Length: 451
Image 1 (cartoon, one colour):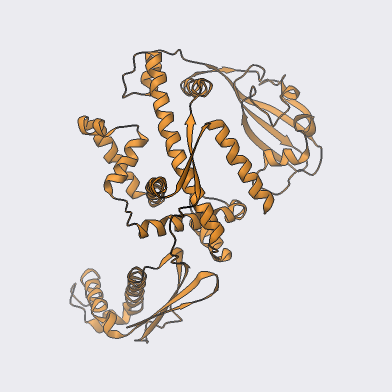
Image 2 (cartoon, rainbow, N blue to C red; image 1 turned 90 degrees about the vertical axis):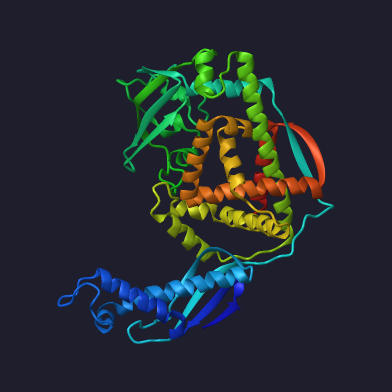
């Protein structure tokens, strides 16, 4: 057995594994014999067929499986022993191996290697820690949204005065039908006055630009993931499919129990207090996440990591191909730069975690899931039903690789943020969450313009 690693451009690396018979033969023979135990060969009792006959029938499939499994394990062990990080899936090349005739095999693994940088917390870097102010206006908005979530919906046959509506827009040239849902009282992309007389029995025929400010806005609104469909002002038919009014519930115990079934809230004052605590927790987490973003912004400006976009694109497309809610190729293309930036950010946090021996253990995952249910440690210890609920959710988390990895990244980010508080120059700033979102939006706009 021989293992060699070579480095290419754009952080592409190759690991070549050379296998000889002594590296795989014992396991191969064991699998062939196991196959003989479970396979009916005419003229032989189960398990009594000679190895030579089994090999004649099954050698190529069994040997290829064993050789590739052996090579892949050696590849993973090699990366672990040499502290090599990579992104995506390795491209495996058996180099035209003939598993009927060959005895020596050369298996090549091409992968995207993430550089092992020696990074640390910069002591002179100013990191802003945002302390979020929870205003009455914001608290009232949250409560209003909670009331809407549990509102009683009543059908109405007219758009005018409806809180929610589902409408259909039809074009003849090109022939397109587009189903959309809107909140008429809040809609800013449509000229609602143009369709205010819309009812179930009364569809309207109007021009596209009666409903939209421009052809470009119409395309972006109706077909956000497609190239331009409509090339000018057109006649359109607008139909009302369904419309609803919301009857909001009163602020009483019935609503309190629906929103927080485990809290036994008795009054509006207590209800507001619980929501305030929940917002404060969520905003604190957002502040920690933002500090990590500021730190990785700094690393992105200091370290250049070139990654092969074409290979990453193909791997992301493959990963989403068979998923029910997977991304389209157009969506992946539009967001590829953002995906690659997030890969780099996560790599920086992993490097810091390795440097400071930060680990994510089972207790961390339990705390993560408990926080999603707003359960405290005391509640988990004293209430068996809540404890079982968390452990049931944990089982589902571990079964879903994507959710599990997202949880690990979030937990790790919080631990890195606590180190930032200890090791970096912190500047605290009081701010409302609305103003914080505006700052983020302005930053993203500036970055887009710079590109």
